[in-house]
Amino acid sequence: MNHKPYMDIPYALADADELPECRFRSIWKVQANDAYQVRQPSGFPDSGMFVTFAGQGRLQLPSGTRDLTAGTFFIVDKNVPCSYRCVNDDWKFYFIDYRDAGMARHLELPAGETATTAKMPEIVRLCERLIDSLIVRPAGYRYCVHLHLQELLLLLARERYDSRVTRYPELDEVLHLMHRNIGMTLRVEEAVQQTGLSRTAFFQRFREMTGTSPTRYMLELKLASAKVSLETTSLSVKEIADALGFYDEFHFSRTFKRHYGVSPRAYRQDGSD
Image: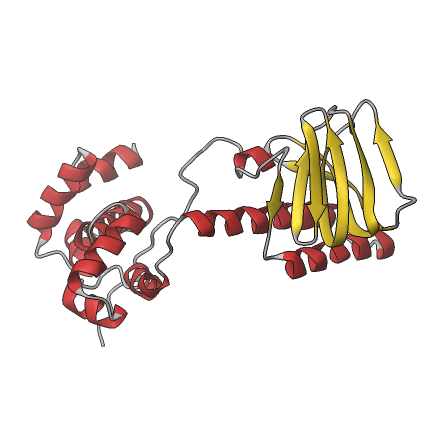
């Protein structure tokens, strides 16, 4: 049986700039009563996060008073004078001290304001994993604690993102199908039927998610795959066109040149040079 060759496509970050990091320093697990009162006249030397999982605390800042209730988190910037205490004889919280190189800001997490979260059970588990790693110190624990902190920030950021942006999980399978079968001919009506959406809703949601139409999205996948095939295989232009489901070699070449500004043969030649 004659099988078409597998067609590759790269998956990479679109932005080449380095992402800001966040370096863990310490975590406190506090179960406080009314005797608990702390003053930081010069503020914290690094950024910190209060994560309240039960009871209530009160944080005094130059900008005013903030109540830290169960199910909330609060990010305080470094060098901000503050004091905090327990309210009503019950405050259970984690305080995470970290050297912030901009990750929290990059993720658009709020600083200086109390934010609610529905992810407290997951956050508690991550905090406990942090503590366990620091107690037991398994191999690589220094890396693990940084990763646990970053995972916690990502969890909060995704929750906030999902509350602002509409996700269309019914399109996920269509996208996976397209990426895993780059050589196929896209049958839009079948894709619409698969999602259970109306045709209008399908096209509208697909464009919101990808910025383009299904046909254009599939074409760009094919062209990206063709580009990689020209770089990494000895397949002829005709064979690549056939494997990717183009009408013929000439149609493929014209489309490739229109998209990349150079013909497939010239692109391969430039790469070999």
